[in-house]
Length: 379
Image: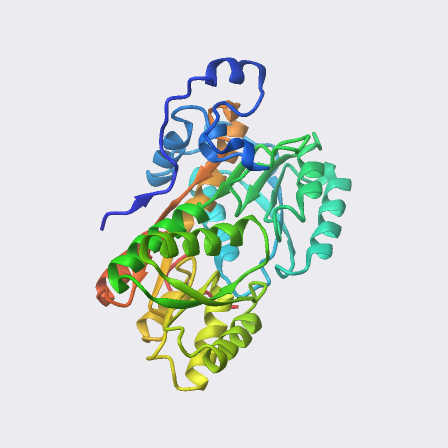
């Protein structure tokens, strides 16, 4: 199966030489750069670095060349208490790849829900104050703009190396950039999904949306998808509900949509939790066969829902790429090769859907979850 590479891919970096020499960003400017408060991956990645790390992640592990007196200490601050297994899979992929690389490690996890912004801020302050305890800090922000000060604070601490998970748009006004960002491009995923939906459902569809939390992620997952299908397919959006990435929000939004907007034949959900809540509401009202439903991410829960015929399609991340890339970044850092890393790593996204055979879904799942394992994770 051909997968779409969501790296932005290699462009000629005309300004890269001078910019890289003095450490200033961006290395290159895209046409709409002045309209954004963040940079895109192609603006900050030096030519070839992303592709080199993607190739390394897809290949067999090459063991760590050095020796360690003690296990590396890794702190993880992320909303892993939510329904999505994205965070748990990243963790499993990272640790299993570290095992393959022969790097001893110990982890400390600081879990929250995605709406618990203040709790994340407390954790970030605690870790920053205890800098001597950690070698690496991995931060999965509840929302990028809300946690910008905490990202800046962590990245500015010389006591550890800071990586950010689940975002790929470095903010321009950060005084201290993290050492690397690891993510899948929500914008690219939205366009992949748009192309698939237009090809399958055609023009003139009326849809409704369970959106997440206002911010970069939802602007791309929901906003870019909406703009694409409305512009290219003449679709109409009957209603947009902000469900805060929670299953309850998906359930409530879908119940309202089915009652008040019966003309909507498709419901777009911006993450796994809302998709599961949406499916639950449809099943409760016996309408799961009447509405076309989408998820986001291709998590184990979503694939199970597709197999059951309750979810129709989802932009599917090759999920373990992010965790494995993080392990390879730690290895490169320990070997003194951090300058070989891209600032932003991106994984691949394709569409999983209910017109695939079970064998095709299984093969896609095997590749995506080669480290973390297939099927829904136990919670």
